[in-house]
Amino acid sequence: MPIQSQSATAHPADPIELEHTHVHAVYDKIAPHFSQTRYKPWPIVQRYLETRPRGSVGLDIGCGNGKYISVNPEIYVLGSDRSSKLIELACTGKEVGKKRFVDVGIADGIETPFRTSRFDFAISIAVVHHFATPQRRLEAVKSILRALRQGGTALVYVWALEQKGSRRGWDEGHAQDVMVPWVTEKDGARTVVERYYHLYRKGEIEADVEAAGGKVIEGGYERDNWWVIFEGS
Amino acid sequence: MKLLTANFVQCTVKACGSSPDCFPLHFDQQMPDIPLELVHEDVDFSPEFICNILPRIEWAALLTTARELGNTQLPEAKPEIENPHAPENAQLLRDLHTLLLETQISQGSMRCANCGHIYFIRDSIPNFLLPGHLVQ
Image 1 (spheres, rainbow over the protein chains, first blue to last red):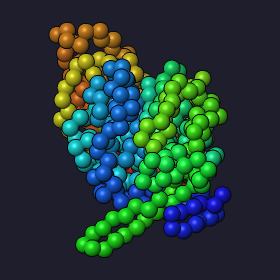
Image 2 (cartoon, rainbow over the protein chains, first blue to last red; image 1 turned 90 degrees about the vertical axis):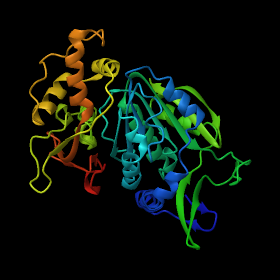
Image 3 (cartoon, one colour; image 1 turned 180 degrees about the horizontal axis):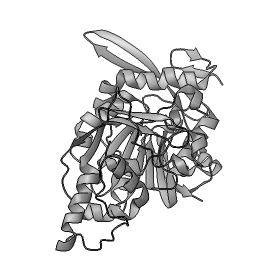
């Protein structure tokens, strides 16, 4: 599948290598700058976390700098991320410090270390769209389902293809696998790194959830993203 | 890594998932160059939180983890606490708080009893990434 960049086109021979170069390495490189831009929780994520019952134990898979792990002080949240640099920021930053019923570790989003069928809930925000094949995106959803206890639910956010009002301007019919530049300027020097994304069509994440054996409870569109809440079936 | 977290993680290797030995991960064998280190980290005490979290804990696994880390004081059976503010529960809740939330494994390693893979903890951060040959 061709990968369309805003500046160039790439053909990934190996999806794992692509994810390594254009997701993991990029986040390790841009971590401090990225972290500064990610401090405000999105309303639906915040509401979901705030409505978890007291004493719930949940996951934040791909927690980045940990901006969501301390939203609700009555629950225990384990955050994981593939980027050790982002986890270091989550650990040393005030996100973990000010509210201590949380913990973080370095882990992959498919090969996860979480105990099977133990968790009351999970969130994975802006993560699954970084896996480079349909099969790997499905595996990522399956890993979330595997960790949920019976009756447990999960909230997943992915970037939408349909966002013609955004500055990116993508819309229905455009290429779904894209490279998105991240630009940093330091002392007048401009550095550009490219992140890989799979942009989700309307209904696509729900289809992944069903194919992974989950049951969709609720879904919608918020700020250029598709979101879905689901449970095991 | 908090001691409580050890009650919620298992071996990352997919093939171990079906084995009862993939959980809990064990602290009983440590590497000489990365010795086990525990630190105490103050956390605000919430009797309600400990009371609420108790039903979610796998007690047998907690006993194993605590014993391997040098704590043999836990009751053999999981305590049942209904009132977090009853005076007779105060000491137990405080002890559990100290053990589960304030005991930080700052350095060391965890071992899967099924496949033998070792996961390292450095600067209080566990690393569950697998080398390429173990990823399926």
